[in-house]
Image 1 (cartoon, rainbow, N blue to C red):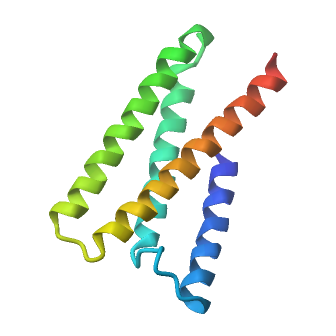
Image 2: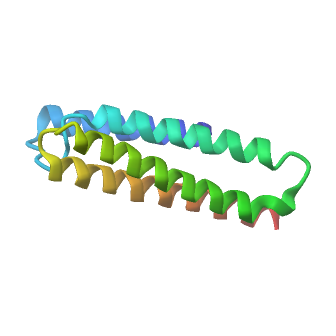
Image 3: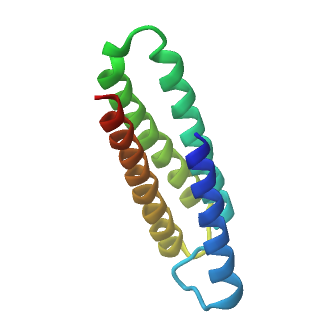
Length: 120
């Protein structure tokens, strides 16, 4: 979980610099809310996986797939909520969200495979 927090801080710095010093039409003005959402979902999934795997490592695959589906459904609800509220720059919002979704999913897979290599 510490790695996810550090990566989120680094992403926040990158977005802040892009917003302050560059013209960034690809970054939505509410990028802070997006980062907070992904940090919260990552924390929630991490805690659920830790609690679910206590004492039984054979449940890893169903728990991980359930966590992935939960992340996807939470993401759909989140984006739907903001689109329903008629947020400005909808395409930019969805683009920024999808880029962060893919980044966090890739980071989670990288972290998972790194841990699996060590444990095998």
